[in-house]
Image (cartoon, rainbow, N blue to C red; front, side, top):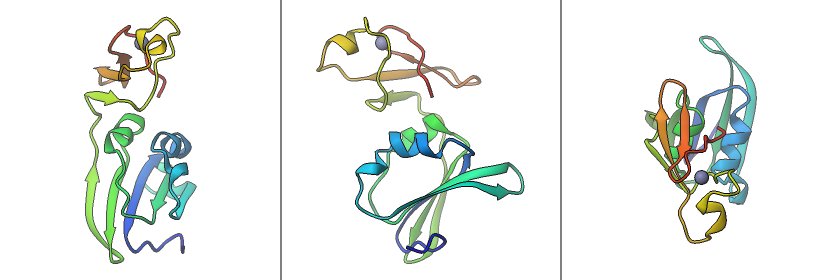
Length: 139
Ligand SMILES: [Zn+2]
């Protein structure tokens, strides 16, 4: 894949520099067998440095994860080499089964069957808390 040319896929742009790998991991991109490019520390006029992730596949991604990790990131959908849609993603109110609670006494750590749900409790400070024990999530 030429890094600058995607035919059909998704480009996650304007990622805060340093957050691309976190996004890559939480999106589960290491499980895809399509070409994925992470471009780090690209010079960007208005925001200094940024990261970019390019996924050359129609595989859907979980937009909630993008909003959780970096609501400033934008998602570009590319079809037949043309940008067809540009989206900005708001922080999701609830995040389901993306991260796990780090509290070892939390019911989600003990019971296997329970969904891992975090709720946005402080939007200004990007604070998510476990729905069950209110432990703060690491972003
Ligand atoms: Zn918890």
